Length: 289
Length: 258
Ligand SMILES: Nc1ncnc2c1ncn2[C@@H]1O[C@H](COP(=O)(O)OP(=O)(O)OP(=O)(O)O)[C@@H](O)[C@H]1O
Ligand SMILES: [Mg+2]
Image (cartoon, each protein chain N blue to C red):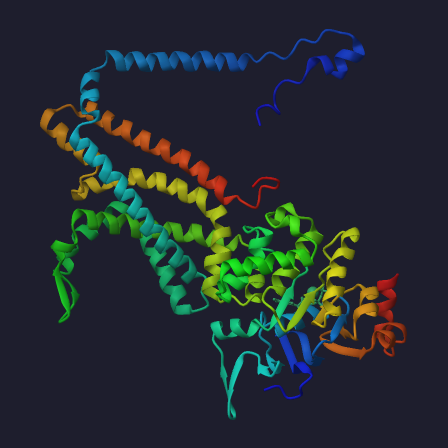
């Protein structure tokens, strides 16, 4: 892309060759000015942090502390399972929204309406406090659990994040399914495929091309959203960082530790997303396998 | 089950209504085993809709269709008809192979995978044995060297030949072609018609919607002219194309030839 926009070869410039006159390329004063300003600002920020009240040695010390590592692991595990739940529900509800059965359609729309209409943190609190509404869960007579035993901070976070994510992913999946040409479904019907097989073998794989980029973005948000679970005592990285700074008072240092890890994880995910997109564009980019 | 041993397709009073529009108005149709039937007619006359009803992609509002004796969309028990579910209808569709104007190859699969998909996923046959058959089919449509190519890497004519191979891989009793060459550049039409000619020669029963009157004249056993959702006239290619009796048929043929 950038090579297309590079300055044209001046030796072949028709104006130069036909007139024999020297050409002075356009000067980009604006770019130089912007660069200078940004460098100046950057230097200011770095200096501010260097002379500010930050003990960088403490950041280094806690960067790989056991509790931080555990929190990081919990954050990653939670992001993965909650996203998996979200994608599963998203596909399910997208299919329900598009079904010809009015009951299925209405209930799926109701689900999307409710979970998109309330703040995530409120949903997390609701799940966490489910025991206040239903002291026990199960089918009376068959099996029953005390809600507080089942709805651990992990479960409450998983349900809260996953079910909320499902409502958003459903819309993405629906858009993806709609992007697949109707002719694909007809061709699949013509070779005797039944609806569920068509969805699984023909439509969803092609819808992936449209679904992957936004879901990749949402996965990245999900990693950061897990931090909301600190309010319901799920020991993800931010909560563990907080626990430490409540004890030692090094608030900024531990927040920086958490920030560094978030940035690392998100950067790795962005790279992964790039390769996933490549894989799912198979068969579209002509001349490449 | 079949009523007469030679009749493969039997349609009676097939009617399809879209909103207030009668796309098909009480069409009767009989196709014998091994027959090649060409359907011609102006745009919007209901040709595609007829094929789509035969393959149950559309459900007719009334009328009945029997393919090899099986009543399309229903199970008959004495005097009662039970509507079939999606799965059973999918099974009935196996009797027909269909080729579309816009090819509709599965974009995310190679030519070979397109052909293997039905036998493996629907018929649950063993992959190895299916692959052998699929390669043979590719060879038959002259595309052995394109097995690993994705549809986007194939010309229109090549895509359509793969689509024909994909339909044949299901070993249908009947092939439906909906304007298989009208999306093709003129120089690519011949290669697809050749494949269809070969199919006709080995006795495949075919219903072909086409504007290629030359092909119809040469290959068809019978030609039908449709207009406004009805069959206007039917006859041998010679009768219908050279000596049409209806004015509408005359006008249409003159328009196509001009
Ligand atoms: N899904 C649909 N919804 C509404 N109207 C439809 C639908 N499918 C077809 N029609 C209408 O039914 C009529 C017959 O359409 P059909 O596609 O069968 O015509 P055709 O003979 O195949 O024409 P062409 O030569 O242009 O392919 C047309 O008027 C068309 O607009
Ligand atoms: Mg048509």
